[in-house]
Image (cartoon, rainbow, N blue to C red; front, side):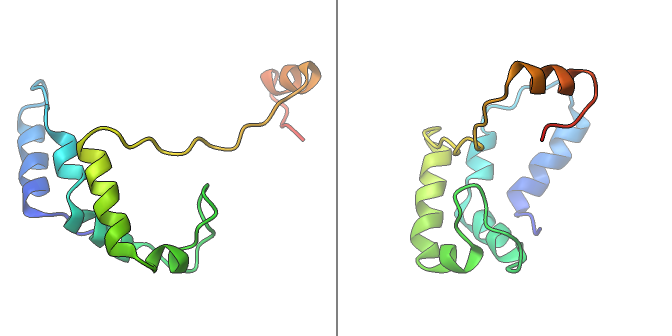
Length: 103
């Protein structure tokens, strides 16, 4: 992943001042150019994400999607989709707690 100059400077600053408070991180992470770089760096042959959208499908209208994502990140209104929920019986949960895998 290529990092923007601003993000590189922030990373260096954070390493030198680990106790400092960081107030504007979402502005750096929500940079449209950085988001586009991250999108382009993702391999296209991987499985679709939790939203069932492949990279090829996401690429259709990617500029608008990246702009919307950037606005959502910067305004703190972006909420990622939760993972798939699954209900377990008491027996399954107890078995997992003692080291067995869920079936």
